[in-house]
Image 1 (tube, rainbow, N blue to C red):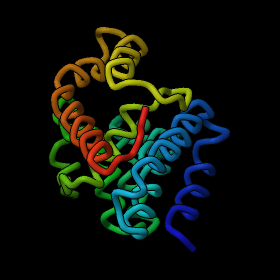
Image 2: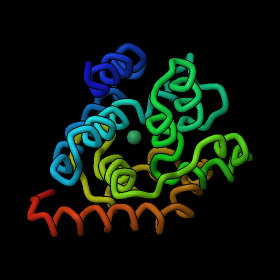
Image 3: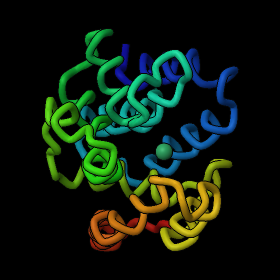
Image 4: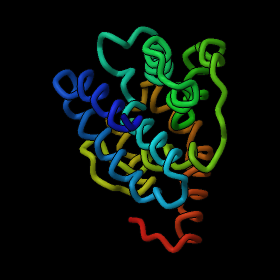
Length: 186
Ligand SMILES: [Fe+2]
């Protein structure tokens, strides 16, 4: 079975009834990642699509233990013996290390390394250009919406301010790679 098929079933099981809006976002991220397929080998595109499905699994109420969804998701995936690289992609998606610092969880997240590759950039790009309702949006729209949704006093809003340059870097690099490959994106 392809990793993507397994990941999609797992993510649906944890999110579709418990957190339907999050599940809609996750499916949007997976769709957005299709745009990047040609940048990667078949196996890497499969891994990336699986990460797209699973990146927010740590929001599932039964899995949310630390308050850092990237860490909770990676820990759960390690438990179910997901490939280590997939766990690491989830652990570090969308600059999670900066939120980990704000929450005092940097050591815990340090169980995994951020691979800092075009594939990892593509995951961040898809997450940062997909709205909570699964629509394709610009990074600026996405960042603004997150800050509005959480409000100025929430740690997530502080995180967005701190993380913006790193997130923008991953978005810009991915879009440059797509342009270089002659691939249209929104
Ligand atoms: Fe996400």
